[in-house]
Length: 312
Image (cartoon, rainbow, N blue to C red):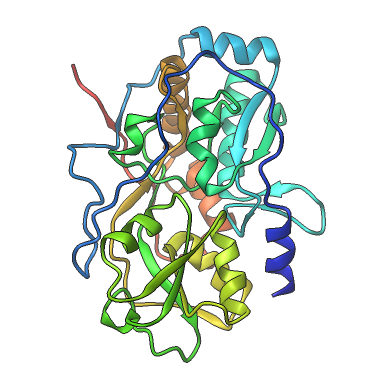
């Protein structure tokens, strides 16, 4: 628990300088269809993962990033294996961090040319809309409602919502066994929206800024379970063997790199980076990062999701 608490204590939204063009105003929100006990699409719109075709062309956003000499990335620093601060080195590491470095390498020729901003779950969309970050690479699910506020790259990982509980818990999964139990979720997450849509009689009053805070509350006995992405929960279970995932994922969701809606040149450039990141089969940068960060806790993943592009 000490390790988790230490990570949580560092997860704050830092004061951020403005770093972007004018943006369209609107409220941050998330959409989720939680019906059913087996994986279902979390959206009602068609092809939410379809993004702009890749391009190497520079535009105003790319030009601004090059002029600044830094990519400003909104990330997590308390999600083990994805984006976390290594206590031994003090450096940010993880699957998402490797992807940020690849984007910086492509645009600026230097994987170290990054300003990292720790962004809580609930602040991912506001940080992009306010121009405080150029990209958010933070296990962020692509869905229809979020597409009203931000743009996404093609999908770079497939995940699903699942339930995390202490070993020996009577909770069996996202089902009637949640009745009367206190369940935690991160504010602004797809898990929170799923629970609001269908709680199975659970007490869902506990929400926190960052999903790892739910793990701490679970460890302290303040809640009975956590609903979060199984990809994140697998890392949490790796940190603390006294907790476990139960049931099966009850949604099918895809992570994407989020950007300002007006930054179309950056969206296309990130998609070009992702095309290269996926290429090479078992020797691709994507598979290399998967084996390094995720395979031990999420075995059996054959590769990244195939990209989808808009037509017309």
